[in-house]
Amino acid sequence: EQDVAEYRKSLAIRVSGFDVPKPIKTFEDCGFSPQLMAAIKKQGYEKPTPIQCQALPIVLSGMDIIGIAKTGSGKTAAFVLPMIVHIMDQPELQKEEGPIGVICAPTRELAHQIYLETKKFAKPHGLRVSAVYGGMSKLDQFKELKAGCEIVVATPGRLIDMLKMKALTLSRTTYLVLDEADRMFDLGFEPQIRSIVGQIRPDRQTLLFSATMPRKIEKLAREILTDPTRVTVGEVG
Ligand code: ADP
Ligand code: MG
Image (cartoon, rainbow, N blue to C red; front, side):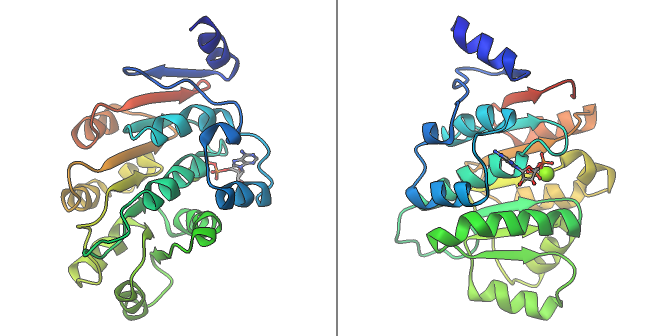
C-alpha cells in the first residue's frame, strides 16, 4: 500500500473511489492481446503515460471513470485500448446491431484525431470504426453506418442527426466515452449529450475525460456515471 501511494505520488496522480486498482508500470501489465501490443509498439509508445498508468487498470476492471488531465497527456489511448478489449470480450453471437463503443468529442478536428488513433488499434482486430461528424455528406454517412460498425467516433450534433435518420441505434452500446467534457459543455452540447446517454442502456461502462472539472460537469457526471473512480493527474482539476 505504501509502495502504491509512493508510485502514484511519483506520477503526480490522485485517485478517489473504492477499491481503486493499483497503477500499472508497463503496457505488458495490462494483459493486452499480441495484436494490441504490436499496435502499441508500432505507435512508438514505449511505456504508459501517468494517466494511462492509472486509468488503464481502472477501465479494464469495468469501472466508470472520471479522468482529469491536461491536453497532451495521452488520454486517447487510455480509453481506446480498454475499449478494444471490451469489444473483443463480447459474445460472438449478437443479434442486435449498432456500435458497441461510442466516443463523443466536441469538434470535428478532435473527433478526427481520435478516429485516426482508434483505427490503428481497432484494425488489427478487424473492428470497424465509423466517423460521425461534419465533412462527409449525411447520405454517405448514413450508408456507412447502415453497413455496420463496432465503434463510432462522433460529435454530439451529427450523432443526433444520424440517430434521428435511423442510420444506427445504440441498443448494443455498452461502452461510452465523453472526451473533452468541459469543451462539449462550453459549446452547448449538454442537451445532445443527455439525449445520447438516454438512448444507451444504463448498465453501460461510462468514461468521462476532461481537462477541467467545473461544477456543472460535476453535476452531469454524477447523473450519468455509476460510482465513478476519479483520477487527476498534475495540478489541473
Ligand atoms: P490528450 O487526449 O490527453 O490531449 P493524446 O491522447 O492526444 O492526449 O496524446 C498526445 C500525444 O501523445 C499523441 O501524439 C499521442 O500519440 C502521444 N502518446 C500517447 N500515449 C503515449 C505513450 N504511452 N507514449 C508516447 N506517446 C504517447
Ligand atoms: Mg484528447
